[in-house]
Image 1 (cartoon, helix red, strand yellow):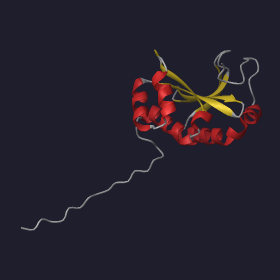
Image 2 (cartoon, rainbow, N blue to C red; image 1 turned 60 degrees about the vertical axis):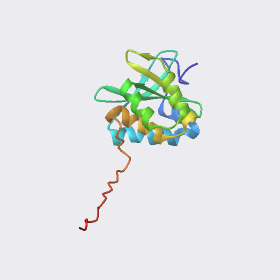
Image 3 (cartoon, rainbow, N blue to C red; image 1 turned 45 degrees about the vertical axis):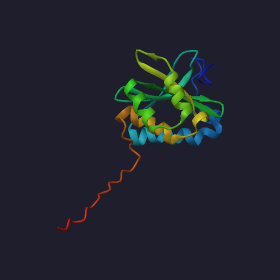
Image 4 (cartoon, one colour; image 1 turned 180 degrees about the vertical axis):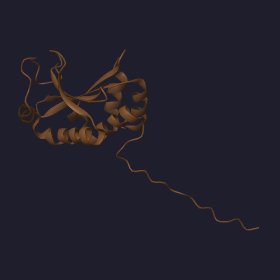
Length: 158
């Protein structure tokens, strides 16, 4: 199985080829791309991961990889490397059982767990954004408003 449609090193895909290939998932791809670049401040670059993985669009910040998108026909594969601390926070905060099973059952190597997710299997930019936030800043998401509730106690009468 290949994670990308474009598996030839010499045939780097153009932006137009990717747009045409991912088809109806283009809106989701561009929303995540915009989030990574505008909100996170990530840099985008093409990366070739070898003949078994193919071409991907990788996002990094301060020289560290955040996430990669591998284009597929009407879909795309999302790849993240998760360290144990990320895995624990994701398991606590994400309630998608298929994704949690995938994370738990992925073997860990020295870099962490290489998680590959077909977008169509989760269909949620919010879950991906949450995973990005956990990877970058821990359990506190950027896009969730916080509400502080104070409780006033009535004065005690003697």
